[in-house]
Image (cartoon, rainbow, N blue to C red):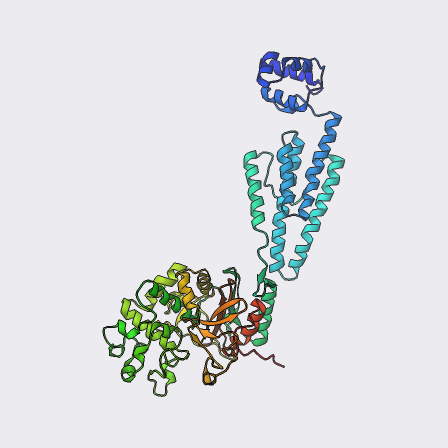
Length: 585
């Protein structure tokens, strides 16, 4: 039949099926007269007419129509050129290199097997190109030196292959695409192939580069690579060999990274799941916990704490080694005025801890509620009252109300045996590792054990008003007491200054407070056992930062870190004693 005319082919196929001209016309909506004229070779039928007849006869089009017409050959070249050349549009708009040939293939694959074959080869190659582009970008970020050459070589090579095939298809009607992954095959189900193509396109779209920059308070941006390089430089210059950092934009962490070691002398690497002593980060968590209990009606912020208990606080038999021993308050005439609000905003009149007293006995030094004086003892007093009031220990209250709801699986106010698998050591000024203290009893002011990942979850929840209402967060993040001292600790606490009037430095409930041109800011630090931490949030902008270090010198890079990463030039770094390091000469 190879040399027969289309009229003879049609007559031959019709008779094999046993159809009369009238029956075939009825099956195809092609008129009897048209079928008669085709069989007599009086007309050259349109391709669509041939398709209708082929369907009715249950045969392939090329069994009727050999496609050897010169005009059809010209059309074929045009469509093949479009299939092979249009992927170049992907240079300007990603995914067009796949989507345009995909559209052409779907439209023309039934017209001729050559369209189907070439379309599949083009699409397979272009999907492979997308995957290579993503991998080359990853190599740029992860492979030193060679990653750059891999990244810049992918596009020129792929363009060269496309241009080669444009020329090859014009000359030979053939194509050659090396390295292609066979996502589509001539033998596969067409519906499955189409779904696969669309899926791959979506994956490649989603796998494109994520946000590469961090937006700062003043609206400027900084690349994440620049942040990483700056941190590396600061850590090297200041000899800080372990740090975790999270930066927030739009109430979500957009940069999370850990650097250095959890055990510097033995060069054991720090990870985001490594247990880190939280120090006074404990107070920020405790402040949210207390407000949750306030919302639940268990306690009021302004009711004297002593009134909640059936007996005087100093009459209770101590249940811990020291922190719930209030026997020294028996002779104190002021402690009974202390409220939960005073404990959280550091106006109890207690010193930071009782061992700062010459006789190690706890006492109130001024009228409660009148003057700021940082005090972990105030948090302990509030904690003990809450434990007696609820019948639950601090650890149980924190797990039920904070850690479990937020999925902070590696956080606790006491040491857990599972922390032994991966924990950080603190380091002193000489980068010597300090012994890990594992026998602390739970204290709301300073025994938090957490991880960089977990504490990032906590700060994210705070920015998004999780756990407690926005009204309660507004209460926490309000200036309950103004601060006019020169420093937070040591001799600076006795010196009054107007240096921080412009930022209205003060304290909220468990968090410090100051004001900026971009709204209020709330902060919390942590310091102890070789660990130095800082966090500051700007709730009205959704921005913030968390810095955790396990080196005593860690705070020497905080000022510059805040300025570079967030353009935070408002944090009272001198008040917090964040004295910048000096580069060794």
